[in-house]
Length: 133
Image (cartoon, rainbow, N blue to C red):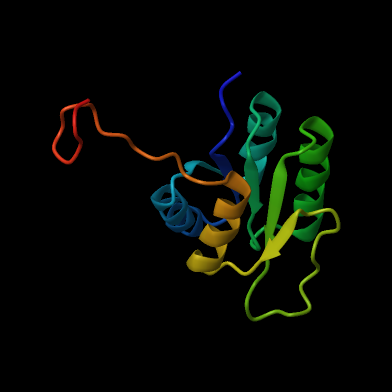
C-alpha cells in the first residue's frame, strides 16, 4: 500500500473551491486529490488517505454518510469538516476529528497539524553550502 503520510482528499461540490484549497495544501507539502461527492466514495474505498476534508458545500446527510464510511473503512483517518464563516448555526458533524473555517491559513494549519512535520530536503554531498567529510 502506498504511504498515506501526506495524502489528502478534498470532497465538495465546487471545483473552484477545491482547486484553490488544493493549491494551498500542496504549498504546505500535501499530496492532494479533489473529488465530488459521487466520485469520493469509490476513491475512499480504494485508497487510504491521511486526511479527508469535507467541504461546507456538501449537504449534511452526504457529509455524515462520508464521515461514517471513512471511519468504518479506515479507522484513524482524520476527517475535517469545513463550516461556512457566515453561518454559525451550521450543523457540525459528530465524529469529525476537527471542524474548521474554510479560510486558507486555518485549513493549511489544521491539515499540517494532522500530517506532521515536513521532511527536510537534504543536499547531496559536495553541493554548495555543505562540507565534505
